Structure formats: C-alpha cells, structure tokens
Length: 61
Image 1 (cartoon, rainbow, N blue to C red):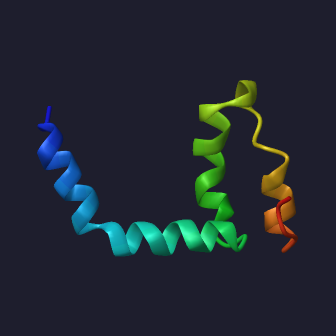
Image 2 (cartoon, helix red, strand yellow):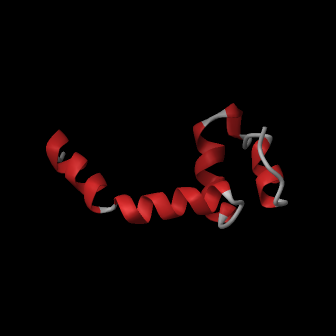
C-alpha cells in the first residue's frame, strides 16, 4: 500500500484533472460515469435526489 505522502503527491499531480471532473459533475455533465460510485457510497444503493436535478441542468439548493 502506498505511503500517505505518495497518495498526497498523486492528488497534487492530478489536481487539475480532479478539479475539472468535479466542476463538470457540478454542472450536470458526465453524471452517468459517477452514478455507480454514488449508488455504492450511500443511501442504501440510491443516488442523492440532487443527481437527477443536476442531470436536468437545474441548480442544487
């Protein structure tokens, strides 16, 4: 398993790409690629109610 500093460096090295992906998701883009992860991580296999709103181009509260 990589050391903490190696993991931190990997995040630092990929920060531009990470920021771009997060911003795209917040705009409602590429949500299909995140849907499986969001379903796995919470709400007993359901995505947040905000996901369909973002996919429709609506703002989250």
